[in-house]
Amino acid sequence: MKDEKKGSILWVDDEIELLRSHVLFLREKGFDVETATNGDDAIELVGKKAYDLIFLDEMMSGKNGLETLAEIKEISPATPVVMITKNEEESLMEEAIGSKISDYLTKPVNPSQVFLTCKKFLESKKIQGEQVSRESIQEFGEISRRLLEPLDHDDWVTLYSKIVAQEMELDQHPDLDLRRMLSDQRRECNAEFGKFVERNYRQWIDGKQKGPALSVNVVDKYLIPKLQKGKPVFFFVIDCLRLDQWLIMEQYLREWFSIEKEYYYSILPTATPYARNAIFSGLYPLEIEQRYPEFWAEGGDDESSCNKFEKQLLDKLLERRRVQVKPEPKYVKILDSEFGRQIENNILSYASNKLTSIVVNFVDMIAHGRSDSSIMKEIAPDESGYRSLTDSWFRHSSLLGMLKTLATKRDVRIVLTTDHGSIRCMRGAKVIGDKEASTNLRYKFGRNLKSDEKEAIFLKDPHDFKLPRSGVTTNYIIAKEDYYFVYPTDYHKYLSQYRDSFQHGGISMEEVILPVIMMEPK
Image (cartoon, rainbow, N blue to C red):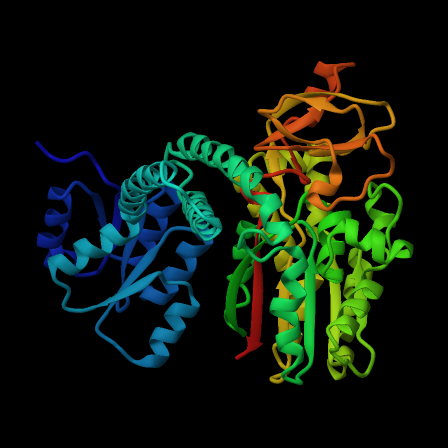
C-alpha cells in the first residue's frame, strides 16, 4: 500500500525520460509528481494547478530555466523552485538566487539528494512540529516536577525563561494543539510564584533574606559600573516591557551589538509610579516620600503626575553614591512617535554626554491600546498576537532607529531595561472598598478594601512593603495570578469589559521577572 500523498511536485526538464527513475522513486515515496519537457508547458501547468515544489532544469531548449523561472514566479510567487544545473558559475547562481530560486542541485543528481530536498521543502514543517511537540511535552513534565521542589528566586527566573521560550517556539507552529496545556501550566506556575513572592518579599526588602536584585538595585548594579568606565552610557527604560517582548526585539539587534542579559524583580505594586521611581531613585516609595516629599505626588495613582521627577531622583541617587557625571546627565521621555522620530534623528548629539537616560512609553501604549480598541484586540487576540504586534511596532519604531544609529559609535555603552511587565487578565476578583479608592485593576489603595485572599495580597499597613499611606486607615490590595479587580456594582458589565486585557500592578512572573540588557556595538 502506498503512503498518503505528501505533496505535489512539477519536474521540468527537456530530458525528462532520463530522469524517469527519479520520478518513479518519488512517487513510491508518496509524492504526486507531474513532468514537463519545456518551459512553455511548465508555465501552462503552473497556471492551471498549484504545486508544492518545482524542480527546474537550467539548460533547456526554447525557454531556458531562468526565463521559465521568471514567468513561474509571476504566476505563483510563493511556490519553492529548485534549479537543477550543470553550470556552477558564480554569476549564474547569483542571477538565479536574485530571481528567487529556493535552492539548487548540481547534475548529475542522485535519488537521495532529490528525496531529501523534497522532505526539506514539503515535510520540514511537519517534522519540526513533531519534534517541537515531543520536546514541549517533555518540558511540561520537567516544569511540573520542578514545581514540587523548593525554588529560589534564580530558579523562578530559569523556569519563567523556559516557559517563554516554549511559547515563542509554539508561535512558529500554530497548528500544534499544545497552547491550552501551556496556558494551564503558566497559570499553575503563577499561582505558585504568587505564594513564593508573598512568603519572601518582606524579608527581601527588609534585608533579612538574600533575594533577587530589585528595582531599587538596578542603577547601582547595572548602570553605575558602566559609568565608572568613562565611556558614554545610554540608559533606556522601556515602560511595561515583558521578557518575551524583549526577545522579539533582541533578534533585530544581534547583528549590531554584543548582548548580555541579566534579570531583576520589580518591586510591588508592579506599576509605573512605584517601580519606575524606585529604579531612578534607588529608593522604595515610602523612602522617596520621606526623603524627597517634593518628588512624590500624593497617592501615587496618576502615572502622568507621579513620574515627573525621574531625572531629579536619578541625580540625587548619583549624588548619594558620589558618582560625578559631567557634563550634566541628560534625560528624555518619549511619549509619542513624532517626538521619538526627533530624538532618533538627533541621537548622536547625545553621544558626547557621559549619561543619557531615555524613557520610552510605547510598549505601555500597546498594552493600553489593545485594551481600549476592538481593532487592536482583533489584531492581537492572544499572547502570540500580542508578541506579533510588538514585533511590528519595533521593526518600524524610532527606538530601533536610535539603537541602530548608536551601534555606529564604538565607544557607546547601552543599558536597557523596563520598570514592570504586564499580564493578560482573564479572571475577575470581587473587591469591596471606599468609593475614593484608586482605580487600578491590578492593585488598589484606599480605606476598608477587601478581596478574597486567594486572589490578592491584603496590606493592612502599607509600610510593611515600604509603601506610603495617605492616611492612617489606608490599606492596599495587590492582585495575584491573572486576576483583575471588579466592584460588585455592575459586576458583570465590568467583568466583561476588562476581561482579556493586558494590565500591570500585580504579582505574576510576567510583571515581576524582568530583563536587564547590556549592549556594546560590535
